[in-house]
Image (cartoon, rainbow, N blue to C red):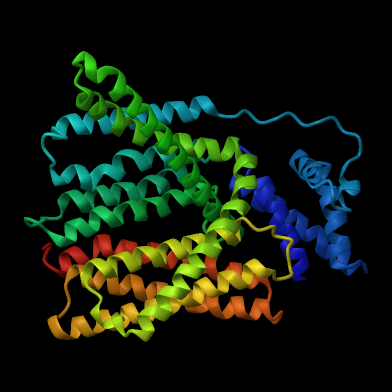
Length: 447
């Protein structure tokens, strides 16, 4: 049955990624498909045969299923879907919607910058609220594209309103460590909040969670490309206008904040409208960087373990390793999301990913040992508590991923179970980020 589940996951991923598709519609179509499979299996067909015929029947009412068959031209069941119908009309790209929300984010962040007097002044309220000036427009863009109703819009707005109340009503102290944690943690919380409209107003679907992981990786690629292009543009502007006496710094103060804010929505639009481009890039990037990170992590784990240098971790080094562990986890997740859902046999890249995960697990254990010893000597602080919680969350995730990856490599488990572990664990990261933003500041007196 796991073979059928992987086929359904592949079909669902294709249909869900079409622009303007409502998540509830996809759930309903999947229910119809599973019902057809169950009926056909009860009639004596195999589950694979039931899937083929079920998709054929669904294709009679769903043009996306026929398009799915066209894209997978090498599959046997393409023949069951194509019956000479005309090519379905392409959904509109939605560039105007993206432009409206991008411009709105750019205007809001610029108004906030002017109110704060940045860059001459750097009030902390601007940094605390920066994500609140941008990410609501991304969530609204998703809600608009998924055609969600008013009830869903209210649910989408709730975490952003609560976040705004928390970061602006808490009585922050001078040079507050908890305030710095909130500046780092709030964007993470709001990014997870944005997953709700992106997933079409559903939270329980593991397939939709993996779709959001895939979107996050692709969004990051596009955003980095936009940022690099923006950097080149600003360099050219500086080179051209500086000799004329034009204040280039003033131009940058206007262009950079608005460009960075608008690019958040533009990158999301590019993910949806140019998806095939990134789908071709994702396996290449994963194949390139996973071995590099695996070698680096394995060497670091051996060196730190043999030299017992782990006991000399200082605060800056701990931060570097925490960031590295997060990057490794993101790389593994993105690599998993980029895989063909129908793949059932392990390959050499799975072995390399296991090396990276195990090495990261060893480093995480050394970091945790150092942190616990330090807390025993000098006690808890906001930064130590936040870092300890993050490392514990990563430890459980990496341990589970290592165990399931090893079982998959030895063919005692399926890739589907490893994917389910990761998608099931995603809310834990969101929960800890929420604790850092909401609970830790009053727990430590907002210092």
